[in-house]
Image (tube, rainbow, N blue to C red; front, side, top):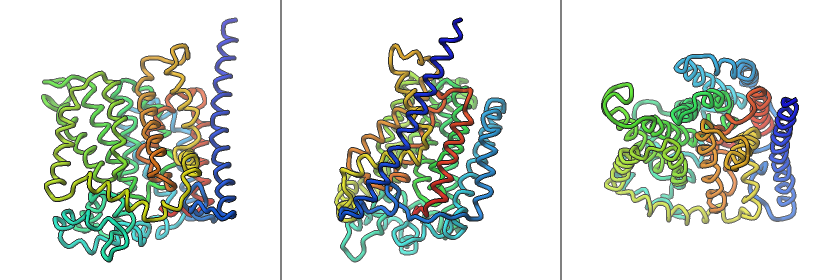
Length: 462
């Protein structure tokens, strides 16, 4: 007799999950309709297929068959393998599958259009690489070229980021990996690293079961549509790896024998994590909002000591750029001015402040919406869902959601957030650990269909 009420409660929760996903998709539909209407009523939103920055054009390509195959295999076998494989083997399989997913999605648009030439467009980083003949001089004079309407202004993407982003591509060129193809493959490799970093972080925070449930969702992350040809994949991979190292360090107290590898291993992990997180801030100004995720790692682990070596690592990066002649704070203020010199001035805040969230639904996937709903329920004292092991996924996903809300309200992210918010959106997948374990394939299918639909219905710019 007691099983009937339990089944009824489970049914109501599943119904609420479906309703949450439905509302999210309705928001996408509303953003499409309102954006179309505004464009035709003389108040353009300046995005080709709002809420996405793309152009309409249903198509298939050489990547279509492998993308369908990767999606079907992950949906069919991913949850089972995630539960059974040994942890190192699971991470290797997850990374390899994520690479296959990203590359196959990019190849839907063809090798040249999907990968090789995206980062060589007029507004992109590679157009500036040949002109960097003196790296120290470039860093010293970087801020002087941020503002537009001057003869030597940086291109849009270079001017909108600190010099770290350009340095990555200059470095690739200097070691012989020049051109759009190599740059795109580095983006693929970095974006796929999130399929390792997110579950590693969840596991380090005390819940291996949740980490195993999350991994297939990170592998089939719909934002992979933009991983293959966007520097934001590098931003996401660097910061996610930094958070994973910080979580590993916080797993146990520092000291001899505490972590495999002997004395000081935990301290070194925290220091390396700080270096990556510090460098992330010099890849993109917006990555200062990774701070809530850092706080989430510290609070869930209940160990604050890793913050010291991490802070030293981050401070070393800050000191290096400052001594080299680039002051982050000055650069940020100039970027705000440059932002409103361009198309952002024309994009209506009243539309994008909510339409951005529709873009997020397509990038993070509709499954993240009911997952976040369940994460919020965990916070309710009488929610009936809370348990100690779910703390990590809840804290990480809600910290990411908070960072996204701050970015949205700031007005510095009007459109194009389907790629700009990827370093935060990928952490929303942590909450998928809270979805019913009896039906993971259904939600994985929803995620895969979202990515495939976007990639085949529109030509993405980035």
